[in-house]
Image 1 (cartoon, helix red, strand yellow):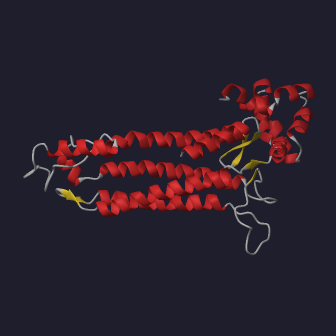
Image 2 (cartoon, rainbow, N blue to C red):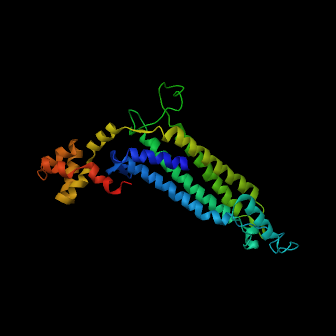
Image 3 (cartoon, rainbow, N blue to C red):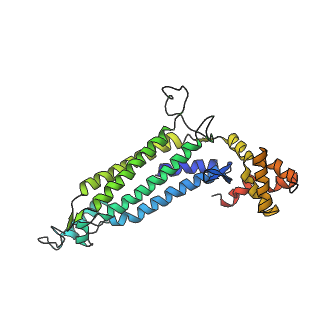
Length: 304
């Protein structure tokens, strides 16, 4: 994850002031910088890692000394403490056997909860990968905002075609992690009476998820994210055509008049500026002063 964080941080800083059209509900919205968009992706994963860290202490609780049903029958009274002390010395960890042994034998909710946090990370990575590959769609009939590195020679049928294979690999790994979470959740529910014996399948699914995420995140960062480029001129062209820049006029001429200008521009197929000047509500000088896409992002206030 350090590779991902450093990789996306570099891109964020590089494109912090590269303004583009924002989108909500799959529709044009007010401007945003590509760097700001990337900062959201960075923070998303940062929060996910915090969720994982918060659950780590629960994985250090061991059922050592519980014996058959949690009563500790036939176990030396110091067994649990001696073994956990030895384990902590060997692995430099903070294992503890100071837990309810009946719970530790009958339930695997710690692993279930931890994998839930892995699933949350995976699902956020799905969102990030999808956003980036959609923004890179094209080059002539898609969003076309991003250029992605060519990891392969191209399509076996269509020469020169660049496919977002690293995002596809990551999203496929995510689908497996989500499936594993169902397996783990069901396995954790099978604690019949005093013991849950489903830990083998639970551990197998958990380790597969961790391995898949580690591998695909690393590959995604090195082979996709690092070579990602913003098509600045195209972004600017799209931004210049955006009707949602009208939001900057609202504080000056009101919501109703601003809406009329945007609607007229849409009907007539003109630019927002042309419609604004035709309305008589805005002069050319006022439009240039009020409609500043970079200022609308407030990037100077939020940078860093």
